[in-house]
Length: 63
Image (cartoon, rainbow, N blue to C red; front, side, top):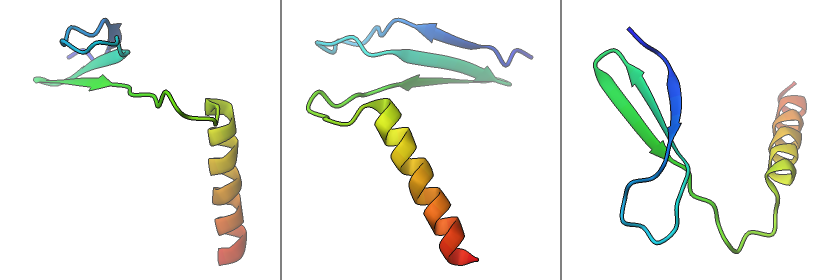
């Protein structure tokens, strides 16, 4: 059984190429495409920092 993750080119008829990942688990192959907003003003780093800050704040409030 292979649990190898591979990045493959998008073979759909979309006008833009989107990154895709394929992972096979047992007899099932999962294909996942990533979609990014072209109008976003927040970088991925900013988003991760914001999510971590929100999670820490929630943890502190629940204590």
